[in-house]
Length: 450
View 1 (cartoon, rainbow, N blue to C red):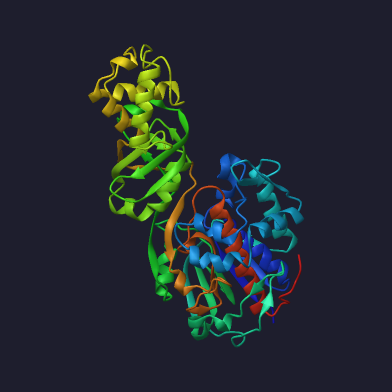
View 2 (view 1 turned 90 degrees about the vertical axis):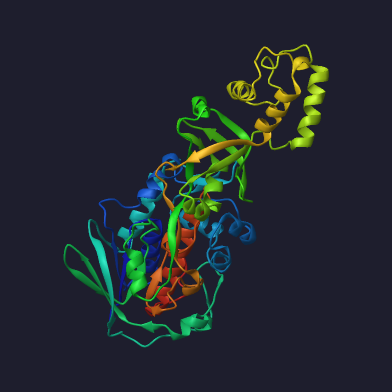
């Protein structure tokens, strides 16, 4: 008797689950259901339209440090499908990838369409059915299961890595397998033996309510990866200026990140800000995104070393004007801004700099405060912190420990990474492991290669 799989969500995780499940189990009737008219929308816009597929972070212990939430869970998952496996998977399907100097990995074509075309071709090749403009409204369980729960012996993934047997996963032992009925809007329903939820993590997603009804616990979803809004602050007059190395901190906390910073017409962005927004996602949500960001424009200095440097500058460059020479290598307009904020005229000679003005300059260079009043999503790349509690998911298979046959992939879980391809790597990993487990439970050969 043929088995059927419904994947709810046509994004990266959902598609990767679908095409791999259909490939590993040719008799499996696989259907992707997407509520919008677009597939793989985040893939399309990622990396400025180039698709930041993953990141050249090959050691698992290093890789998991890029995830503010879910690192212990991912330690187990990434051992079963890693960054190298992602590169191999796309390469074997005619999409070679390249690594850039900052570690981000893109298709050689520099076009996200190459990734989209690859996934669509795989879906067509393995007869994956896709239904658009069809919103899942409810998942019902309790329909008779086709077979009893299987507890296979240890086996390996197609990449030769160990995948643990599901019967060793604690609470997973008590999970029940049922046939599912998925109801859609405005009408209609499908029955399936397996369901994979890959809807993403948008906070308003009704999927979280369904999952709660099914017995899961959901960590409250909040935005991650966003820029800082500073309406009316004079720094926004420096729009377009970037600093290669700055340190940004949430004042009054230990939350701090270092890296490139970009000044925008609404405030601040760039890798340092985006990484900080990820690590501080919950704290900043609680304060309504109203807080103080403290910036060190020259993080190679602290207060003591900076005072020594200024003493040296006043001695060596005393007759020269403070605004005439940018002694710290900062962009010219930013340097003039910092002088102005410190009450120093650009024509003031270094030797004439007062103690009060010097103290202000020290403070503004290494700990300048900026009031933040709100956030802006980074280039529509919406990422969510929160989702289904990881203790309720098997990290080797992505199967629910509450209901056998129900799988989760991607951001619907309480996992999120910083910018740089890390969220896509989690999508590929979770989608693949769910597909592998589904194919096995459907009775197909677990050691299928390719």
